[in-house]
Structures are given as structure tokens and as C-alpha cells.
Length: 234
Ligand SMILES: [Zn+2]
Image (cartoon, rainbow, N blue to C red; front, side, top):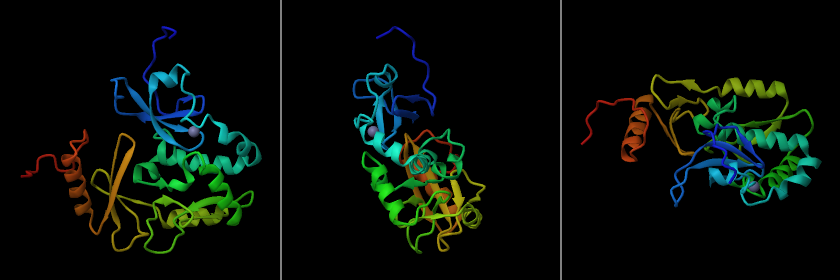
């Protein structure tokens, strides 16, 4: 211990291989924790003092899986890291259109083997310098808010812009509710994000989504604003 007072930890702050995503629940021994994204793609809750003082430098992977792939595939590494960051990091400039709306990354592209799995998939699926990763290209019926081999492909910048406008999410007058025209039968979706965990569900109407969100917040006693704070629930 150096006796240096630790400031409140800001999302986006990097400590060795770990980047702060937000506050976590207290640890079993009562210390404060943060949610961290490791360079290897693992998201983990860790005692924030252990990370800030340099005792814990990675999720446990030691940063080892990174070094070779980072050097051999720098552009794919950046595409992969940015994909996770905009789903996880509230300070990412695109977070409001991705993580805040429930976008996630499939388990096989996360964790210590996530980057290598992603690179193998990319190279087998038409990746070339200059192309961008595009989500939402999967067949109908799939959960389109997850980055996965079934929902992603590489496209040119121009193609990406066309797709983005087509799937542009719409705003709702209700908190935590948005629309996405890519799922026609249930275009409205509610999202609740609490301690790094996202819950989302689709509905046919905007009102159903807003009511479900209120019920979910009440049932789990979450510190969130409600759409209908005064309504009576037996
Ligand atoms: Zn790691």
C-alpha cells in the first residue's frame, strides 16, 4: 500500500490490461469493486483497489493471449476490441446506440479465446483491409442484437451506411424503450441495465414494453426511474 488516496474510478480508465466499465457490487469482504473489460475480451468484477494498486493486471489471462495476435492482426484486433467496447463501455461514443440498447457480443468471441476465434471467423468470411464489421445481416428470427457469426459480415463503408440507416433504432416516449424495425412482429424493446447485466425483451407495442420494464424494476428492487411511478400494483 502506498497510502495514496484512490479517486472514484471513471469508466474508460485503463489499468494495465483492464479498462473500467462501471461500478460493481461490493466484494464478499465488503470492499468496493468495478466491472472491468480485459484486453482479452473477458468482462469481470474485481476488487478495484487490487487493480488500481497494480496487484491485479488482467482478468487472470495475464494478457498472454494478446501479444501475438495483436501484432499479427492489428486491424482485426481493433475491430474486435471496438465491438466489445461499444457494447460494454458507457464512455464509448457509440454506447448509446449499442450497449445501452441491449447489444451484446456472443460468448465465443469473448473471453481468453475470443480474439483468436474472431480472427479465424473473419478470415474465413471475406475479411479484407478496408472492410468494416456489420451486424444485423442474419436471417429472420435470430436475435439481431448480438454480434455473432450468424449476424455479422464484412462490408464496405458505403454498404455499412445503408444498413445502419435501415436499422436505425427509433426513440420512444418511454424510458428504456426503443424500436427496431428489423423485427416486424415485435418492434418495441425494453432494456434494463444494472451492474453491468442487461435484461431485454421485445414487445408488439410501446406501452407493453414500458409496463414490463416498470414491473421488472419493481420486482428486482432496482434503483431506476419508472415510467409510471404512481401506478398501483397489488
Ligand atoms: Zn484477460
